[in-house]
Amino acid sequence: MALLKNKKKGSPATPAPAEGVPAPKGGGKLLGLLAPVLVFGAAFGASWVAGVGAPVIVEAPEDQEAHKTVAAFSADWSPQRAASTVALDPLTITAGSQGQILKIGLAIEVWDDHAEIDIPRLKDAFTTYLRALDPAQLSDPSFHVRLKRALLHRARVVIGQDLIADVLITDFLLTS
Image (cartoon, rainbow, N blue to C red):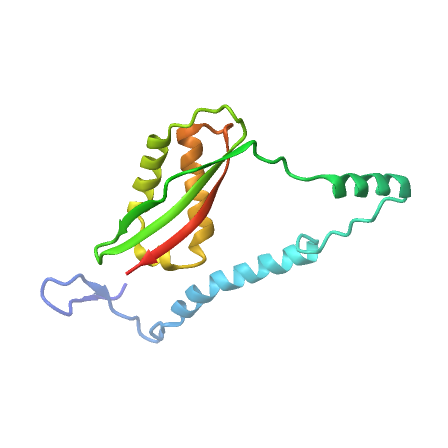
């Protein structure tokens, strides 16, 4: 075995290279970086050859009468309409620390005409959620769908899952 050399006092000892044996080069790093890419490529290729990524072809039924019945039924179907709509007073909320104001009008669609809705508790849930939002989110048009879904979730938690059909945003004004 080769003798150990110390580079500095207190540093760990490293073995000295043996005579006639070339010193290792940094080629192991490249293999370490390419190995995951090669494994992923091999797995993708194997799944494609096996047919996992191939499209599935579904043939139409040969019975034309059954096809006409299904088509007629699906053309006549429409979603169930909510029994009534309850409009809430518009909410005015400060948004963020820059003094922006959000004025939002909301209406709740309910399944039962005689359902009792706790309006103060519902407005509290909406106000608490809206107050926590960032003004940048509110000014983003794509956030509107997520806002509506979040308000619907809060309405169903407060009022009841089986009573609330939808939350409608009737007015939306964000000022700076």
